[in-house]
Image (cartoon, rainbow, N blue to C red; front, side, top):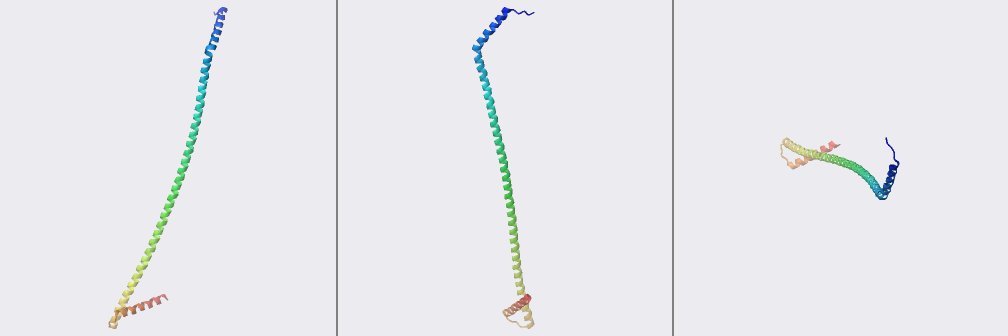
Length: 164
């Protein structure tokens, strides 16, 4: 079994303590400085990582805000374009209606002029027929200007009778 010898034990303790003091004087400070330096490097890295993360979050929030503004602007432009298109459509419809009304009025005026021209032509033909009929009845050729004046006055009389 294992026996404990007091001499080896004392020498072991003395060696341990001497080695401890030598290491404490020579190696302890550099070891502690290296550990502190490493702790500081890790701490700096963590703080930089936190700063970077905060910066990334801010950038992400700004990007989201810009995206929301862009979406809002797009919606606004779409609405404006829709309103403009609606206005253009309404203007085109109004212009088409006005043009149709003008065409209708022109057609009505043309019809009235044609009717008046046809009535005048008909009056001339009636006057000519009346002159021919009268000259055949009378068997005498009167001056056609006189006949025309007589027929015109007769037609005027008829028009006045018609109006009353």
